[in-house]
Image 1 (cartoon, rainbow, N blue to C red):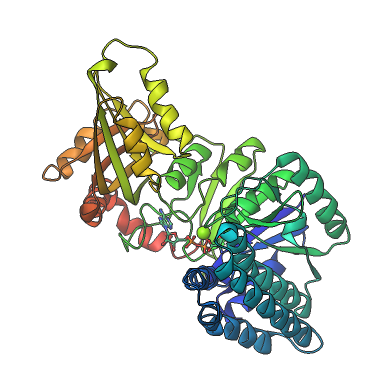
Image 2 (image 1 turned 45 degrees about the horizontal axis):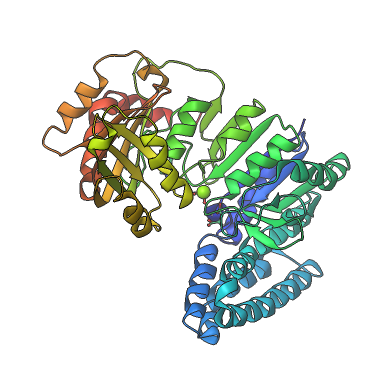
Length: 463
Ligand code: ADP
Ligand code: ASP
Ligand code: MG
């Protein structure tokens, strides 16, 4: 059975990182491999930034802003490839740069087509990194072939966050990948990108390469999905907030899904579902320290003796409270209310209700003004921006009393709102002011995990 190995942007940041990826891919020589790769780190941001400049009408300045991104690809190719592979890649790079220049011109001139043009521009990040990686593997005696992800992942037309059409994608993916794997060749493809049925380039949303890898894994029924990134697995908290957070050895699918959904960027929120449906174990590993154990995500609902496994947080959250006496004893009210969000294609994260009010949190609130306008027909609407959700996750939370009391007494001086225990009973979520996140997460981590730190400092080294 095959495996999928996904490498994020930092794993292909420069020539040294590419060499490292080639080494990791070659270790798995006994199994058929599909390698899914992100754009070189920062390149998607550079390409998006170029489209923002083009939106001001200055396509030349937009193109000029990409000079460094092109140079990084060129430098990596010089370092990693010898001819004729090098010349071939440099030719592809020149053609890509011409196409991007043309797309940016169109972007400046045709505001109505910007979403599709944006997808076309950013797709070059993954197109180039995957072509380069295939060539690098081949030169390092790992037989590899580049497969255009847009021939595999067929999506709807929802540009910038397209959804995969599973039946078409599955048929195409098998068609494209299986013959390559059967020849004993490593298939290398870009993550994040796809195409509509008519062949127009789309993207799956920021961080979407993890999702591509999970989709491919599900469609060709792999035995393992490996996510190679810049940290040693899923940690007990975001290491940018808690630098001494440590690796969690094992997570259940539900725990990983909750963590990803509530802000642990290490996994894209959509990654877990295809893995669950096909019982594929997901391993998250550090490409900079490949021998470190990392995290294994699987169906086991191992209940840890500590009740929680990790703390996730998400900033930039908006909370809304709708208060209406009409709610009292009335049915159909919540349906009508949620339909407003539905119409504006806005996702609600957390909901709590009382007799006369509903509070909810929104991650993406670009449609807020129109939503508020409609909701004011129901009652009084209060909006608070600049909030953050904090989420404690663990199978052990199920039926364990006292976690909430322990959490809240740790941060008793901080104002907390929208308290919710998810239906799965494995998450406990609440909202605080965004400015207090660092403090809240640090204090909770200290409270729930400090006793483990001495042991894990050694354990985390390697296995
Ligand atoms: P990649 O480019 O490999 O996809 P990402 O930047 O998307 O990597 O995800 C890895 C980052 O996720 C880490 O560097 C870390 O800052 C962040 N992160 C947030 N929460 C967690 C967590 N609980 N465990 C591990 N990493 C986390
Ligand atoms: N390159 C894309 C991004 O930066 C997709 C990914 O890295 O997963 O969002
Ligand atoms: Mg990512």
